[in-house]
Length: 206
Ligand code: TYD
Image (cartoon, rainbow, N blue to C red; front, side, top):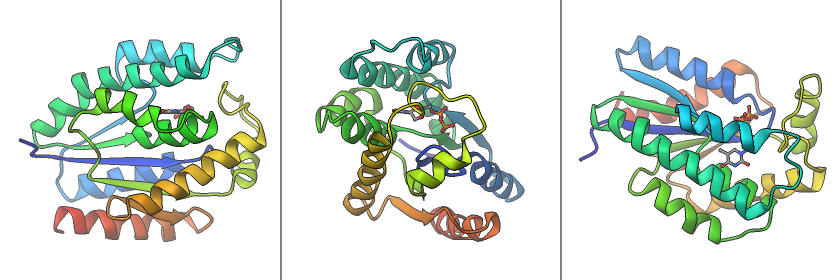
């Protein structure tokens, strides 16, 4: 039986997820909740090793199916070792990226389609997020925001790839309006935080 809550954050690169995750975490801790913060790909020792393989810009020859399966493998370990136990202990789990990243990046970006959901159903099982915050920012703007940092293998992809990812997220938002909260990421940090906080307070009955 699920006792805690599972909240995920999604969005293109440079949409400001980290800032908003930290703000929400601070709010929930101030309300007295036991919150754990984790991320994908990664979140476990095995997952971090898989992350290094996936994101290494040297791995140019990686096949799209291999990539999708590595993300799913990292996720399976993460659910089993971190997410499931924490939810069952009544904690709130906040995760920076989860299954929707795979559907947007591998399903839409790489063009693998529905097979990505099927692979991931093995990894996720019944542990789908209760709410997903989608920070929406056009890829050109996101790319500008991350232009000064060293890019990983996915961030180095073409503009058309990132556009397909963006459209994938919009499709997911329409498919799952109950779960996915789409937020315009061009607002100020406080404006965006207020929208997210209102939705999450509703979920938690605050
Ligand atoms: P991450 O380092 O979390 O990037 P960011 O800091 O922008 O959130 O994620 C690494 C990259 O992996 C990111 O470009 C998105 C991509 N990704 C996928 O393609 N599929 C997935 O399932 C996940 C979780 C991430």
